[in-house]
Length: 538
Image 1 (cartoon, helix red, strand yellow):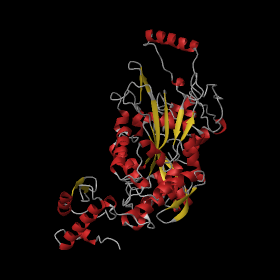
Image 2: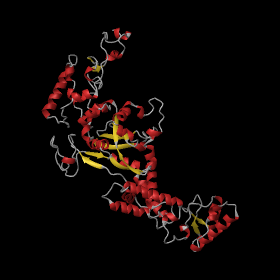
Image 3: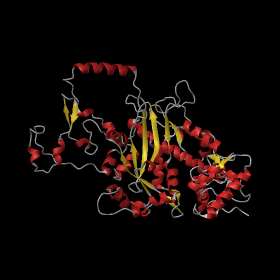
Image 4: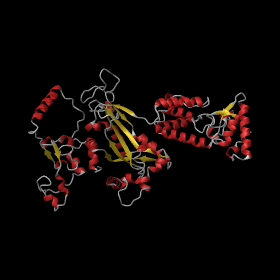
């Protein structure tokens, strides 16, 4: 016959609670007759502190008995042999099943790692300690969440795990070091790829160049000098498709991913990305894509950062982030849902050769757009074909030029006006200025006739319409792009230094003709970007 524990939830002033406390103290003392102190199960001590019988009795009346402590394992009660962990605590039941479902979702599309899944499921079947509401895996995930939330260092977390291992009972399954914790959690995390790159940004050693030891374009070695295993440049790629599937494996997030179709207030104003012309163009052009509310609309953001917080650092780092606009407005730009997909690091920034590093991401985005991937919706409990579209990019003006390969400096710096940009060279300031903004005014506007207030000329030109996507596509048809940075010879560098010395003496006579504008840069838009322009997504 089991011990009566119903008194734990009674009023502490009642006789039943008083009798229950006395019965508990007799039970604890009978199992530890040689000890003067026992673990205190009050709501504050929760069996972490040991006190005398008198002090434990006072704590139980002053603070109350911990209601989650239903198996008195710290005081000698043994777990029934044939009972499962979920049978003795409702909280443990939900936690047990939640961890099981999480593992099933994580390994639903992984066929080559059965051993990892088997080991994790075994950890789910083990309680953290006898009577705990957590299993071994969920308890470690709880600590790992706190580590990331409060920024604990690896050293402090390692020391904490060791201390917790000493405090808990001897049969506890918590890892004793951060090394053991990482080994256990390795199977739960999402995978990433390290792709080697040419030091001159010519190619990625990927696909057909996977086994190459030298760059076929410039001949540079794949490895650093005097090494055979250290690559000269590495691209970190975090595939987005597994993470999209992981998002839909959570019922709450899967429900939020359809908010744009059911929770948005349609008042005719631009209050959400769905009200934008690009979103509406996609819905009106591709009706099948628009019918499925779970299809993802994305934005891409890229820019260079300095990870070392020093303006004089010679190291460059370019993160490429995807943003999901299906989510509510208060979630889509939150840190949790900003998805890092690429990390381009090296001594120099990729500049216009960033298209080389975007190739793996573009391949996955093309797969999501053209074919789609089979995904399980945990909210509706069904499989569906997930597709995605990239609506636009978010970046500053120089990064916009790198991504789209448009000219963003010089005489033709406006990517909309292109060759029709009104520009003027200022010889004294040695800068290009843009004074043709009066052409956007009505034809009879008085500012058009003012000379002294502007450039001593009347403005008679009318605003010209920007090129359409089809016109840009036809203009660039047949163009072949060449990636990589060319290393200059010693003769070229010496000639450049001599020319700089001569020009410094003749700054007043220097001319900067418009013919020197980089026409190649204007034409060097990647084939994938041409398709986006043709469909007017930018």
